[in-house]
Length: 567
Image (tube, rainbow, N blue to C red; front, side, top):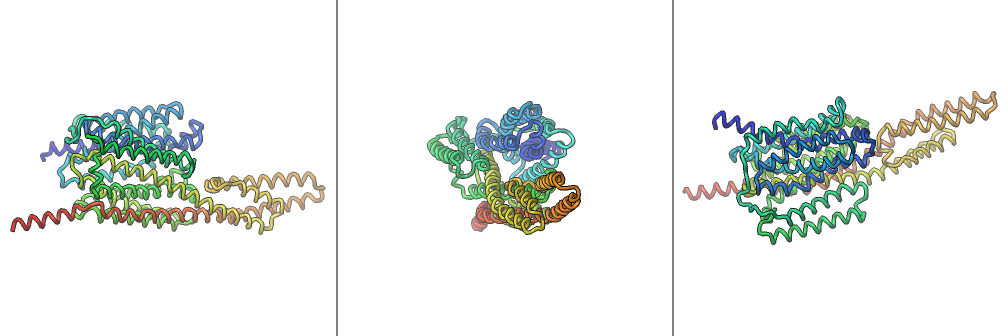
């Protein structure tokens, strides 16, 4: 390869990577801007959360269909179309005048990202010889880590110093460079075995299955797992998936060749990737909640702390790609998932007084596990299937990762809510006993107990600010009672009344840190039990990952056969 062709290859690869980067960046950069967005539109959290949910649902639903269409009609065409749509929808998100418009544009942006992401692997791999594919996947995994790492930090900086709209406008120059490089330098690629006939029935049924399943998982936080609405969505997903399998078996030109499902390494890789995303959810969603509600960090501080896992994942991704090409992917994949499981379990040992450093090294361990496992798993998926099927396989593996994240968040939210409800109920009882055992006046005790009882689990979890508001409310009640008592007391007794109330204030100020510590202690137990339970759920992923790659065994077998023939 001469210098000119090498330079062209590098610029083409950069064009592909930049498109992949911004599509993944928008899964994290927007989240930190949600509070400012809610304030701007004067809407509550449940409404504003659909800025994130709408993107994720659209992203998951279209990915398989986009992969198949790209295989049939050209991956470069779909990539460029995706970039144009992503640029346009990013601009529209930034100028949206109402929340409803913003959510609609976010859904369209998610659809655009679903077109971009799955074609990046086959487009990138075709640029390099097979012996370089491990390194390419390593860089590809590192870029995913950089996108995740830079999202919270970049989003926080843009929101803090500019506006929430800037988190959308930042996509425009990056998308423009990606489009120019790709349009000029990228060559077209197809699945040469794919028919041009569109499998509309297959596309419709698999999209419906993913839509119902993803929406059902998201809605569990509001409706509960046993609600008729959520169960109906899951039933609709199962029915759609069944219809999809029936349709694909009868179709002459299926969008997803079911023969791929008979490749055990491909099934294991996809399933193991789902488990890695559940672990990622524990290291992003759940640990973020721990840092902001229990450690009282700001959202930006929490985001800057969580970056540790993404940065570590980036470093290990670069190393694990070439290494997996030499030693095989299944050992690294199992090792990585073991580290992820261990990190999640160790999150459970964090308590109310753990330092930032305590969280950082655990997050770094999680990132190492992600970097070691994800790239070999993707490598195993693409190396053990026919080369022409890279596009649809990329779609399946990316859907698995996306669904894993959604499943992880839904499970974690449910388990944390249940654990917190139990622990904070116990904490509330302990706090009431502490107040009753104090030397406060009976009327003040009653007021404090009433204030504590009025705080539900969500209020108690909101951090020190909410509990400080409760203290201020109690003190206001004491001041009000003092004023009333002074007005009713004779002048010669007013000093005594005032001294009694001053004593109550002093005792409340001494008592409140104890109450605060008790609540935080029980909150830590709620987090701990959730982390521990999730870590046990990840154990099957370690075993499954071990079966994700048999390529090394095949290579050894072929070497022996070659040696026998030569002799």
